[in-house]
Length: 120
Image (cartoon, rainbow, N blue to C red):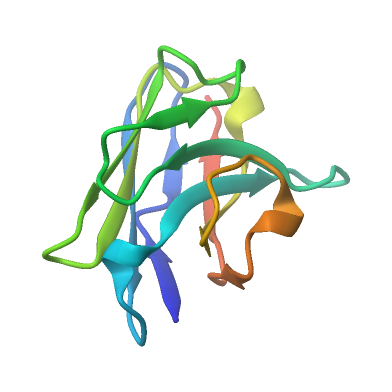
């Protein structure tokens, strides 16, 4: 089970940190990722992090602004989002996989999502 938290309404340029708490599995065995889905659009990849945390990948649209990290002792993955833009507005989903990739079909467990709204 994956449970996201930390979403909210912020202004352009603000920062926000999302958290995803995992239970029911050996968290450190899984690749973790964040995806997002804006209204009327398909769910898209945001960032992923390997088991140890030593390797990460980001979508071009968030590179340099977002940072994914994980704490295996707390079974939690984070997404630090800085310099937020209105186009970052979406529901953000946490996902788990046993392979390192950026495609939706590679992830077999999903959270319920948390809303992030960036607006002045």
